[in-house]
Structures are given as C-alpha cells and as structure tokens.
Length: 139
Image 1 (cartoon, one colour):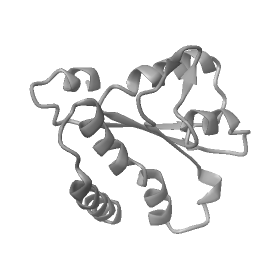
Image 2 (cartoon, one colour):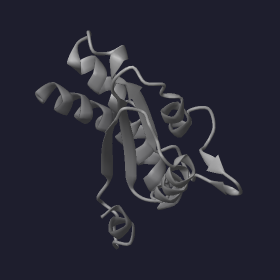
Image 3 (spheres, helix red, strand yellow):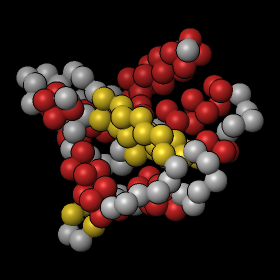
Image 4 (tube, one colour):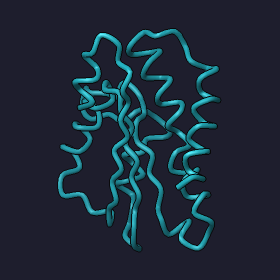
C-alpha cells in the first residue's frame, strides 16, 4: 500500500506500521535492507519491545544517531522509532503514546519535502503533533 501511495499523482496517504516484538530477529541484514527500501516510501515503523529481552538490535534499527546502512546502501531517512515497553509499563498510557509517536511528524514532513519535493511543512509539523496528541488522548 505504501509503495502504491508513492506513485499516486498526489501522495496523500502515509502509513504507520506498528510492530510488537520480543526483540529477537532471525535475519538482521534482511530487516535492515527492507527498512532501507521502505525509507523511500510514505511510511513510518514503530516498534514496541515487550519483555526483558536484549533490545540492542531494535536500538540499531531505530538509528537515531545516523541513518541506517548496510554495505553501500543507506536509508533516505530515519523511519523507525523503537520504544521498550518496560520503560513505560508503570506510567500513564499517554506517556507511552507520546513517546511512540514523537518522531512521526518530522518523518512525515521529511517524506513530503525531501523525497516527494512538496514544499517544506514546518507549520504542518505543529498541526500534525497536535492532531496526533488529540487522537492519542481520545483512544
């Protein structure tokens, strides 16, 4: 669906893939390749880690410090947000939701301005953040 949205006359759809994992990846290289490919699509990936597993692989996929890469391939943008549920399980649900969604507005703006060459959406970032916050509280 995200690939089809990219090829629309006006790419107006943006997708968010939510993954809930125990932190164990059977093929890290293939996962990195898929995320790099997806970095050109109108989508974000949110990963929630559950349990007490070692989430080092998930932190690597999050790639907050530098864009995800493998070999000569490099992601066009950061599309992954990882959050270990254990850090929020005793807190208010809206804190978890806010942390899960905090990078999405910037990812949406980066997709439309850098990749699709739509004019920058700095004003829309605030509107999107407010809209996401309102939707989180409504759930």
